[in-house]
Length: 161
Image (cartoon, rainbow, N blue to C red; front, side):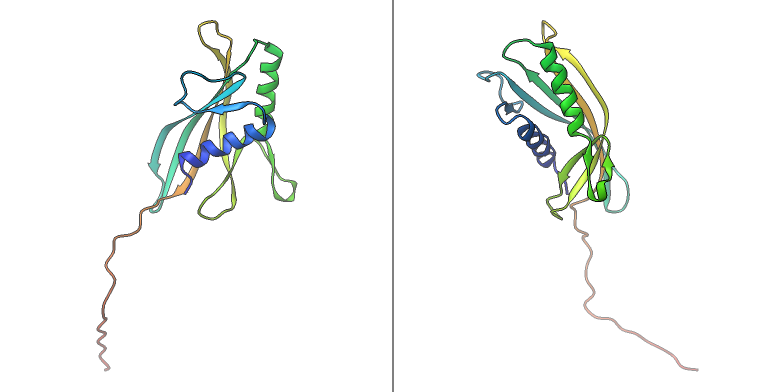
């Protein structure tokens, strides 16, 4: 089962590999951050039943980039690089367009979660803080175990005619 923690960790790892010297923060940091830095935020959009043991989950991922000095060219480079990070090559050189690679903690296998609605904009009072957003959508197994009683014994009666 892929959790919110797993999703956020996957994005932070991608950012860390590409930009190891740029810090990554969560929403708990409001003061004392050191630019340049990324703030990564994840919001649940919906979770609904998709079958007996399956749920459909939809999330919105936001990555805010705070620069030490405002540089528009650097911001465009970050947009292009993150867009490229969401394009992956899997087994047999199969290209996955706009997916987030996530290691499923239950099976230890890579899953490629569909990433849609890739956009970027500028936020803040001076509109100079880059914000990149995309949505994630995937099916997952439910963690609930069936609460059924097991049979203790069986009686089988047959009649021959």
